[in-house]
Structures are given as structure tokens and as C-alpha cells.
Amino acid sequence: PESHPLNFHILEEVGFFGVANLRHLKVDHALVTTLVERWIPKTHTFHFPTGECTITLEDVALQLDLRVDGLAVIGPILYDWEDTCFTYLGVMPVKGESLIGSMIKLKWLRENMLELLEEPSQGELHAHCRASILGLIRGVLMPDKTGNKVHLVYLSLLINLIRTRRYSWGSTCLAMLYREMCKATDVTSRIMGGCASLLQSWA
Image 1 (cartoon, one colour):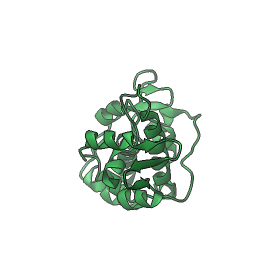
Image 2 (cartoon, one colour; image 1 turned 60 degrees about the vertical axis):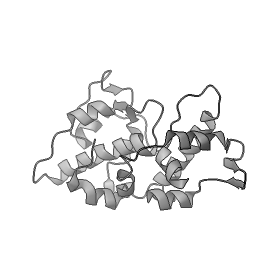
Image 3 (tube, one colour; image 1 turned 30 degrees about the vertical axis):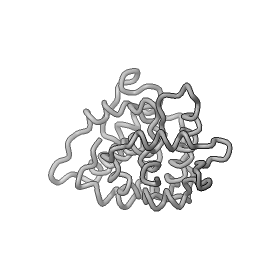
Image 4 (cartoon, one colour; image 1 turned 120 degrees about the vertical axis):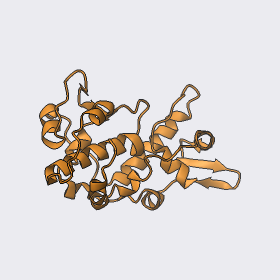
């Protein structure tokens, strides 16, 4: 879901405002493909005529303005996800349709989030902000090859938005990008996940 203007200050407080600005960045697929072709999985480095280099945590902090130290991005996987979604997103997904196991369909979430009123309550603002961050996690930071569902374990890390900033989202993003680039070097691979925006801005 798109970030509502009223949520911008919250996104900034929890550390996701820089990521929100990348939502509409057009990815240069030719550039990404060229970089992947120079990626060496054994060393996690790019091999260029001038030598080897790689994307570092410092690059992530500078490019995405995300925390690269702090708490590990892990959480419980056994939850009553329907009740959790209703409590913290304000919507009740349908198990087996919009809620697949512990993942929720982003399209359904985008279409079913209630519109914010002119003077929304703090609870309504926070629910919208959580939905926006879930969209940023799957759409920008850590997209997979389908990109249409997001694991609700991330929602458990957004319950307390003050605590959310303490997680090392930057290192998690970089770790996934490394893994996805390693997978993409396989000649049978056709689509790459991971934060292409980071890869492109770094280049």
C-alpha cells in the first residue's frame, strides 16, 4: 500500500522514509544483469577489469538510510495471523485466499486497507504505516521472485513501531541481496529477487 502523507513522519521515525522514496525508482534491468554476470558467489564480490569490489553495510546505510546494526530481524512464525492482522492492520484476511499459511497477499492488503479520515486516530495511522512498511519490505527491500505476498513474521516486528527502528533491516536486506545474486548466477535462473534499487544506486 502507498504511504499516506500523514504517515511520512512515522516512517521517518522508524527508519523507512528513505526506502519509501525508492518505491517508484525505475530499475535498469540491463545494468543489474551486467552486474550479476560479474558476481562471484564464492567471494561475494564483483569482478571488474580494475579489480574486485562489493556492496558493504556502509553502502546500505548511505543508500537506503537503514540501520545496519542492532537487533536481528527474526520473529515468531506461529501466530494467530488472522487475529494479528485484524488487531494491527485493521483488516481480517481470509485464510486460504488472501492469507496463505503465514503470508498475506499484498494486492489484497492494498485493496482492503480502510481509507484514512482527515483526522485519523493514532491506531488508524499506525495500522496504515504497518501496511505501508510491509509493502516496502516485499516490494523494495526484500522482494522475492513472485513479489505478491509478504511473510507476516515482519508484522510481528512492526507491532511496537518505536522498537521497529532497533532492528537491523539494512543487514537483512544486504544478506538477501547477496543470496539472490548468488542464485541468479545459475544459468537456469530467469528472475532475481533482492533489492535491485540498492544494487543500482550503488553502481
